[in-house]
Length: 328
View 1 (tube, rainbow, N blue to C red):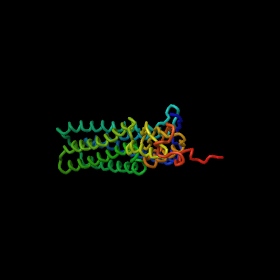
View 2 (cartoon, rainbow, N blue to C red):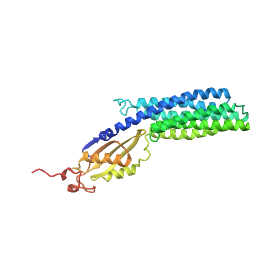
View 3 (cartoon, rainbow, N blue to C red):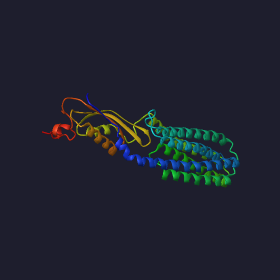
View 4 (cartoon, helix red, strand yellow):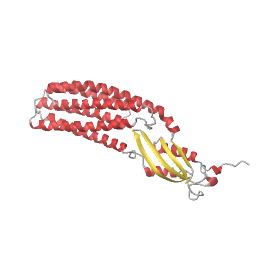
């Protein structure tokens, strides 16, 4: 093996830096609004749950307490992620967003277990609940949760940012808790079935667990540097080997630093005389166009004495330096 050439895809990254910055600013504002709304309603539901003796309302308030902390953690992570990289942190602080998402997911598990535990005890001796005030407070909580969800969905990147998605799931879990509290309050008000309070609480806890599992599993996948969804290693290798002059692609790695920040590294084997810079430029453009990977590191290795067996050779190869007219 001879010549080595490196490219970190800086030109490609620069072209998307402005849009990434705007998206992060939108995420930050959305989280700030959601945090404020959640904190205010959490206090109202906690007081209301204590006054009405409603587990459904208090469990929802407990969920919102965790949400307020989780939204604050997500907001802090985004602010830190905006800091520039340094020699000791070459990728900056972007991974904090994934750590925040993981912490949020684990917190959701803990809340669901606590709600289920308390509901189990209440099933055998359901206490009397002031259902009408409970429903009124739950309606206010529902409206606030829907407002938070709307802000996160329309101003934040809920689809592609795992940190924002975990916060969004927290808020949706709160909204479901409010719906459950309203339903339980109506059943108790009209029929006097106070057992509806713990039953609805367990149903909400199961919904919370479902969302928490998705966030935790995706966070762990990223932290373990698993291949991002939609990135097929075999398809990537085949596409790169279709570039004229490339004989073989190996040592391929694709991983995510954080949501929306996928990274590629790999070795491209070419024959002597191939213009490595043009191969790298073509490969970087191909990865962004076909797989959405904007951050690439390619090492071009020259191997062999001729172009035998490659996609092109000699005068027929557009990336071959020998195809250029020689001065007389």
